[in-house]
Image (cartoon, rainbow, N blue to C red; front, side):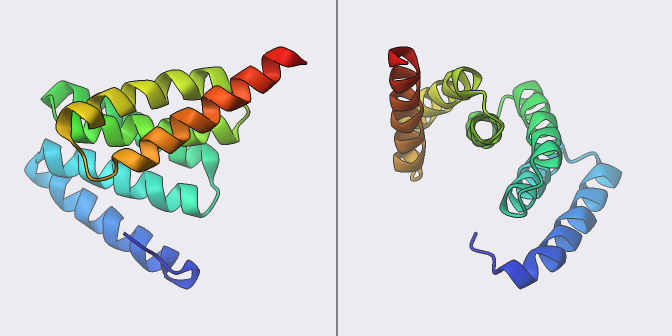
Length: 130
């Protein structure tokens, strides 16, 4: 989903309303999806702590219901947060797990996860040299 900066508030409100409906009906797949959507909006806004919280909730629920695509998405989002927060080792672990799932699923966003893993591995190697 591509969002213009001026539409972040609208997107956030839309996803929160959808989450409330999913929560009322106990639609766990919908809830896990909304957590990921809200995590994305928080990342785009550079609200890293909030993004970590949403992606963490999404990961927990996705694991509970066994939705591999949602697990991979949450792991990827958490990896980006950890990278931004200066924890490349943790980010790499999360990104590698996301990539492995995306490879099994032949996910259309495989390239993004692959590039993230490469970037984090490179960062780790350059950090070892210093």
